[in-house]
Image (cartoon, rainbow over all chains, first blue to last red; front, side, top):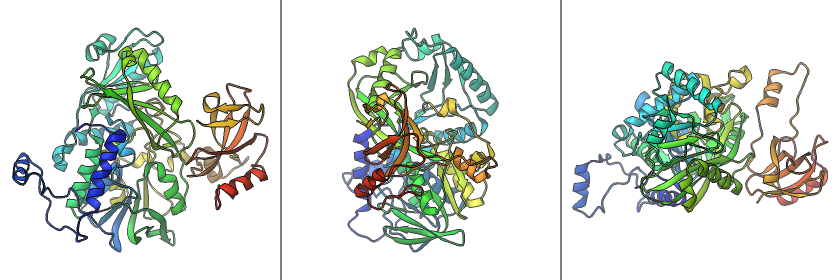
Length: 446
Length: 109
């Protein structure tokens, strides 16, 4: 298994997901979920691995749920999981118009870090990172969390000052990062060219316990754990309208019929504007394609994640050996899931300056995901003008790393109406001028 | 490849020759605007799947700003028109209706 992504893995995801929603019988499987273990592998080997249970139940929508979550990506599934685990709310449906984990969850570059400048960001991203540390054990599902270290290169004097400031802020926030010298950079990443020519490496912000994880497994692991708690995951079911009465949400119209609910959580990334429209409010965000690409697989040459924000590119090596490269967003709204071609050239041209060996590699695949970007480049986890309706959106170019923290905080917000993790991320912060200005960290590259 | 015809100089410009300037026809109310209006002006944006009206600048060409109508799902450009206007020309709206029956954008349709 690779921790990657892209078209090939997404195709694999779809096969896997479709298998799960087209069983021979429509009878819901009510047998308890069996734990994954070394013993289970041995046991299943006796029948040629043909009798593994489905990872999650097929579910048909009931008429009514306490909570309906729209969007079965990482954030939606994590929300459902923590609603069940932390608050005992399991009469929950997660509705997905396509297949589970088939949007940005299956399209990102799998980077996990929490070296943010502002306190609210550091809190939620560090919560997420710490949950990733034990996620495989918690979910009984191997998400291949690999804390291999994330390095953010400082290639101008301004960046040096910025990252020194971030390192100090992180120390106060309890996030373990430090500023390292060019010599240490070269020791960790021997393939790097420190000298420039345009942008010499002057140091880097280094977070040792940051890294990556297998993105599909995060979605699948949450889905399996949700299903085991009795939460229904309903795929291929598009929401077509939001039902309301006297300013309160009462349910959703879907392609599989109306479903009523007490509370509604909208967790649909690039499609947030559409859903907000149905619910009757507007959002301060726009959707743009963000793209990534991978090279042919090569032998291990780089064992951490490197981000170069000045030249704008970031890179890691997958377990399969491909160099995974994150590119830029288009400068205009779009829903094409591919992005502009010239960004590929810009990204690769920039990275070749810092990693000359890349010039010999062939690029295999390129793809895009639709990211929803807010005015201050920070997410929205908030109540909405429609009572009982909550929205989790605006993660922009960096949502994967936040999945567990976002689910944790959003579940608390939905269950209790208040969460210390999400308080600052209210959609009213724009009107109040209380921005969480992460333009240094979030506006450029994740 | 995304190309627009610049209504100022007539050049068919590829997107690398242009700079995207965001949503078109945003109205600033005031003085004495309500909080709602001011928040809307600063932050709230149309985010349509389909017909969208935008500002673009022919930055590596004649340097002029202009307006464009484009589909965000297919990248089809319906047409461009000069910046010195508060709303799209009628013939462009008719052309969009022909191609996307039932479309709407803010109070246009």
